[in-house]
Amino acid sequence: MPKDKSETLAIRISRTLAERIIAGQLEPGSRLRQDHVAAEFGASHVPVREAFQRLEAQGLAVSEPRRGVRVAAFDLREVREVAEMRAALEVLALRHAAPHLTRAILDEAEEATRAGDNSPDVRAWEEANRRFHRLILTPCAMPRLLASIDDLHAASARFLFSAWRSEWESRTDHDHRAILAALRAGRVDEAEAVLTRHVQWIGRKPVRTASGATREAFAIVG
Amino acid sequence: MPKDKSETLAIRISRTLAERIIAGQLEPGSRLRQDHVAAEFGASHVPVREAFQRLEAQGLAVSEPRRGVRVAAFDLREVREVAEMRAALEVLALRHAAPHLTRAILDEAEEATRAGDNSPDVRAWEEANRRFHRLILTPCAMPRLLASIDDLHAASARFLFSAWRSEWESRTDHDHRAILAALRAGRVDEAEAVLTRHVQWIGRKPVRTASGATREAFAIVG
DNA sequence: GTCTTCTAAATTATCTATAATTAGATTTCG
DNA sequence: CGAAATCTAATTATAGATAATTTAGAAGAC
Image (tube, rainbow over all chains, first blue to last red; front, side, top):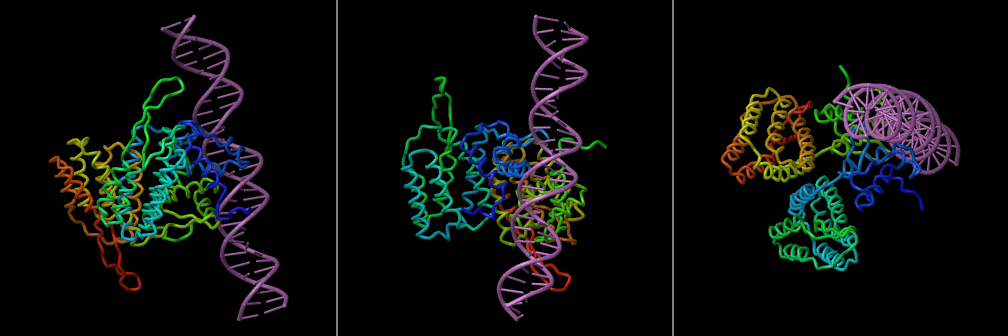
């Protein structure tokens, strides 16, 4: 397979690291040492530095000058912050996308919802969920807005995976269906209202840790 | 004067270039050649590359892999996009900041408004305006949200300077005063409504070009 | 005896210099 | 005149040097 010419080494490294951070393989707060990463990818440290900068721009890593870069930590406060930002921006995107939504797009979004309901694990569910949101928002044709929303989705996914690490129960997504129904009927305001609630709804769920203690976990669902 | 240790070369370069782009000294679409910039700053091109990446993350530059990076172009569509994003996010920030606004902060914001009214040029006005917005929004204590708003302000300033290049007429900012009055009275909803209108208001203004032709320029005011 | 403070070594980030690809322009040959 | 090959300029990546920070250990103070 020929290597993709439109892709630089730094971009590839940054994507791989982003996936690990989102998946939780890299602990929040843990250091990212450029020499180690460089060795792993068989590259030198300059492209690694550029990859780190990309991660920082996405909010997945934080860098203290001359002290290195760490995987971004997050707490409940930030989970809420990201959720509220998503709500504000996705509503805006939906308002502009609504006039351009076709029957075909809505059908595809419904298919994505079904795929989400039948997901065997969080990972699959998250992918289907993101597909749903992307489908109904992309027609707004506002590239900067969509890029911001993408970054927020990455952050959301991180929180999601940290809460539902192994266990996963499938369930039907009523919000998605309500949004689609409202859009089909041309009631954009109603769709916006449901979307706002949907994104901001933060589900709490008790999680049993290895020690047997029960801590409170959280997950953005939507 | 001792050099600031908490600041890397790449950051300094990026800030300087950002100022030039915002001020319009660097034409939209013009190429940023790393060797030239490196020579000017007496540095090598690695920190310059990192500076470019920062600019790209801010939306001030666009990079095509293996083809170099250019100053980001912008059109009326994007001006509107940035304005709408600002409206959505600033309203969110204000909602969370409102409970923490003190008398002292509002007084300082009023002072910033007065400074804006008496500004001799766009540059000074923009600075005062940004101070106003920052003052009333910072207490929301949502770092990610505030960072996004800052980037959008930079984009707005770019558009603003491109429209009001030399000529500038001072005028009193009624919106700012209305926002402050509503906040003092505890009517947060009203303040949010005015802020939304205020940010999204896009002033059009005919501008005479060097060739004598009249093109349409635009400016976000607020 | 424990804690602080100073010193030194090692670890790590940052920057410079150099080499290798790649895209774009020019020229040459059919 | 058009297409292909070459030449040039600029980006991308590597390797090595520099500077800063952190860690560890020893000496001194409480």
